[in-house]
Length: 254
Image 1 (cartoon, rainbow, N blue to C red):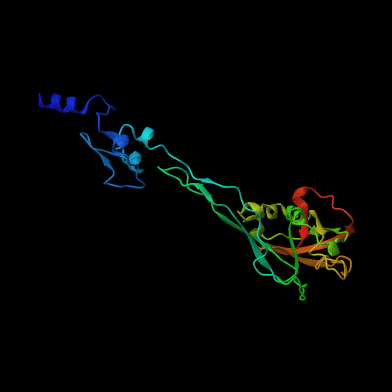
Image 2: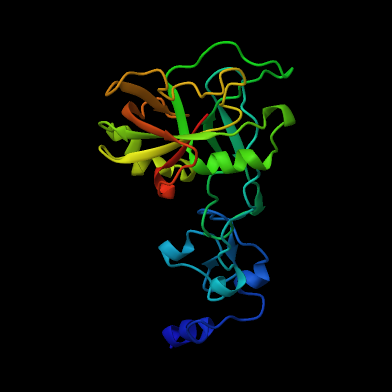
């Protein structure tokens, strides 16, 4: 019968005759592409949308496997974009493998973080003071040390302990990996903030905003570098040579 002939022409379900399918077509197309069709009968497709439409060729999964994006490791952080003011630094990564056939898309290729450099590009020390005390995670201080401290700047740093006042909700809304430390800022908790080069002034041997000249119980201001809405008050508890807070509560003046 005619029906039997049609059925026979298509062959067993999932089978491909020579010259049919995505391998024979030699193409795997992004999105929905009506031109990305293999010979029939039956006519089938080798585009990314064929799975949703259910008109893929039988060999689509084998001939057009999903390949997810692969990116390189992060570069090191750059210098601050502008010296002598609250600015930002950048790190980047590049794509090693572009996604294909519906594989996972690439993650962000650039991140920014707040910073301050206390010398201009000619190496002259910046003159103006910065308000309020600028802080970031202690891991930034460790990274800063890897760059090497100039011989004339080899001063002994110190640690200041503060009790945090109310924390604005904006501190917990950060998403960037390098900013996760702000989520741990909690009212009433004690934090340790290290003062070291280059935040430590060469003349006074102090960090701006450390509260050294403040009276007892005076509330001082702090701000998370790179996130101006994450700011608040804290009370200075005392000064030590070394910090001994948990890592999530170990910060550094910048």
